[in-house]
Image (cartoon, rainbow, N blue to C red; front, side, top):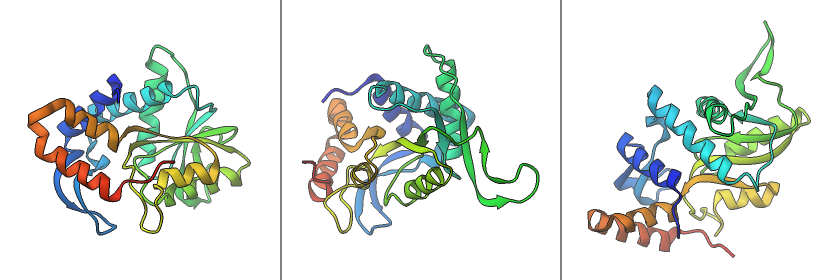
Length: 223
């Protein structure tokens, strides 16, 4: 497996920020995980700027799979990610100036009103969010998109845990792709992280073993 340069940098940056950590963690599902990813720790201006750069790199690396007109950041974590990503797209070599918008949790009945802030939510919409575990937030975003007559172009998230659900051998990302027929792209996957640990060698030997055991026990099945 080849790790792209932006993926390598993203993993190292996530570790440095404490976003990606290794140890023993109890997940919401009750599973004991040897790693944890907390995107909320991308909590400085520099961190957010870099995250946007990595999201933009993932979009550009998958440009043959995704065609979109506007970027949508679901409230709340998706909002800064969407803003940072469109800035990175506009200032990168491609200099693509992409409109973006986000939703309010509660409808505003004064001023401009409504629940959508920013550019019009129309055409082909690319959703940007941090992670997807059960896919609930993505499905809520799709409902918002459909309600205004727009269409879903795809989804970008920071990490794909490639982990089967509680009642299915498929991951949340696999289920969303199958349900909506669009690509769901992750900046990095569990496989990418495992490959990174292999490259690092002795420094992460024990952690690599735990990661591979976890993947063997809970990894989603890919046909």
